[in-house]
Image 1 (tube, rainbow, N blue to C red):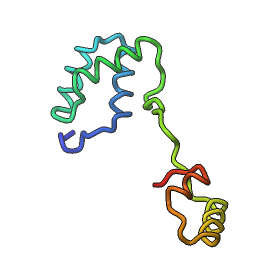
Image 2 (tube, rainbow, N blue to C red; image 1 turned 90 degrees about the horizontal axis):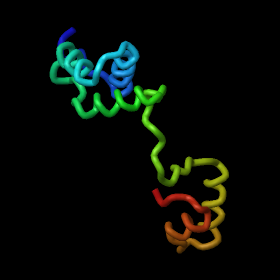
Image 3 (cartoon, one colour; image 1 turned 30 degrees about the vertical axis):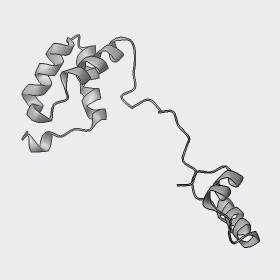
Image 4 (tube, one colour; image 1 turned 120 degrees about the horizontal axis):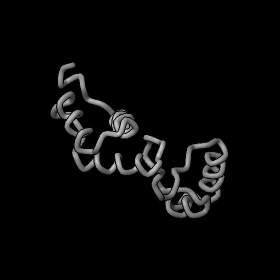
Length: 107
């Protein structure tokens, strides 16, 4: 495998780390093995240690945890109708007023 074709996604890196943890390898052994195969595209030792610890503690998922924050409001026919109604009622309405009225983001 060439170094150029060995770029893996974060989830793929984590799956490899999880596999090696289940085999009983230490983070150092996992890192050295990944560097020997993936070369420059291998994850950092810090990342390997972090995920190895999480898997040793019983984590099963290789996915990122959900992050806090306001969820993005999707464009729906209902929102479009509400916005149209507001704009027709007051053509000088501001974006922030629409967002506040409908409790949606200004994005």
